[in-house]
Image (cartoon, rainbow, N blue to C red; front, side, top):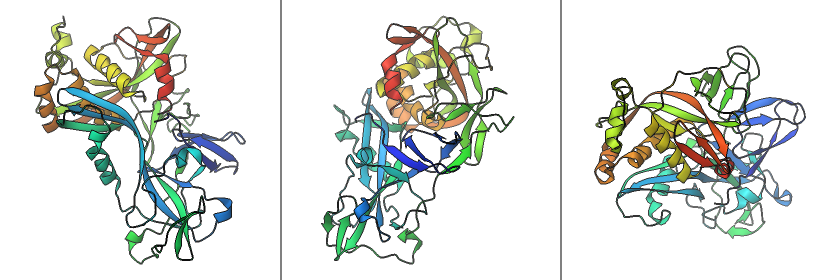
Length: 417
């Protein structure tokens, strides 16, 4: 993986000016009219590779490719294996001559959001999103080094999963690449059918939602790649849902020093059915650590604490492990600090999917606990967002209450995931 995002060219919905977005951007900010809009497309983003101007025509056929970029984790034998994965694969069968992968085209060529304004026909994927991820999972042994062959659990975290459509057309009964003009095969292009599965309709375009506080109407603040926006007027926090913005319970840990970076963590209340894991004392026994806790502290409800930002697999495990084992308890402070807040780039649903991996990482007897994790049902109960202050020391950011640190360049690299 080269750590670079591809770029998407989009017309501003308000003034029509061209805005260039990175793959990770969720805020469209027009440099011409200054409008700020949240970019939302469910269940995944759909992009189109632009054909060469010499081959731009109305009878184009757009062939879909699944693209995955994110972190892969596996509970293997008695250890946690992980890596960063960036791959794409053709999402339809039966088109002889079409390459199985787009290679580096998404990084090298300009893209647009797919929508009805783009002339041509769009093939519907015959390979579903679920089956694509299943194929990735089945191929883990070729992507994760030194696996023992005893995979108990695997998870894809922080993924950017999208469809990328590549244009082709038919000329003299040959299938022609509309980007290079090269003949791909002599096989006929499938004709539009009458069945809904023929998928000739283009995907729905993304929705562009105003970044206004639903509570007070003030402008919401946040960096271009954030998933959670903050209102400076009523001090509320909001994330995008299927029907618009909805509130996020957010608090801030005590500040002990100046010159800090405020990093977000998801605090997840999860029931692990079949495992005795309800309190901080239960966690200490599972991890086989000795902690001098008062009876009150030992009986506090246990919470997973997972970084709410993308970072390398190694540092995600490290930060989540230290934060979860620390189980910090402090009076919550709802008013944000007068300092920039690091953007939330890892959604809570993916932090939830990471919890079995984290549980395996903190457990002492891994050979015994891994099979139990595989058979455990994890049920989500509640979530909140906690910002912790990290102080700079040399090339690292350090959090004293959690007892952990992260290199400053790891944060910079994580913004590119």
